[in-house]
Length: 274
Image (cartoon, rainbow, N blue to C red; front, side):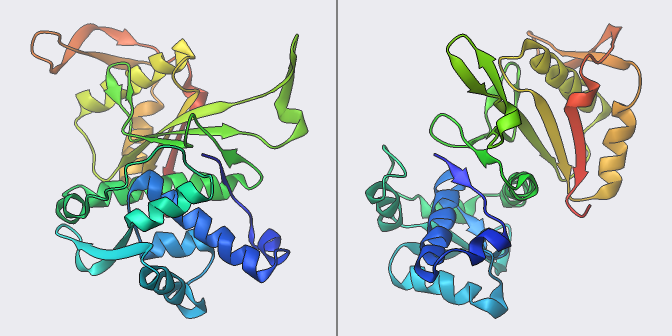
């Protein structure tokens, strides 16, 4: 599924009915990928806020039966969330945006999910990348983002695939010009992990980048700048203490070796407040 991002100037050139469909398509595709979102993220996606018709836009689609509003046990009643109804999923299929789908939205599971803060943080990290890249669009096998994807011995919060829309981002092959496609792992950290876990994950990410068949870089996101600084300080060391996953106990254990990172320029650390 392709997800194109237009800035405010581009949106101004679209006719009113095209803007409405553009906003609907963006929001529905986002909800199809992530299963849910909160109102604030939805407002950012569609370029509206509560004073400019954001609530009215969402309410209209709820009244049409495409969306349903719900609350989550972890976030409480003050955070309103939305998800697609089966009719909302059918809208995407009718407009050729998806091929196969599960029409049954498991609302109860979303209401009882205890990891919502983390999921919303990951969404904000993906949105930050989408918004900052402007003329790029995101594209994958059937989507631009893979949730909690297993990569080697680790599971990343999301994988995003960027395919550029610029002439200088293409290279020549014997069969013609090919786009430079880059894939990035996203990790969102709300709190600090243990030292051994941090070093183990950094090493595994560096090794996955070396393999070149998994992803090209890692984007670490934080909602606390002090935790970002904590991770970055460990990362900038010339060598790291090496930790590995024990096949017997399945625990992270220290080895007698040190690890020298091979791709330090392929990591980025970002606080969502930056």
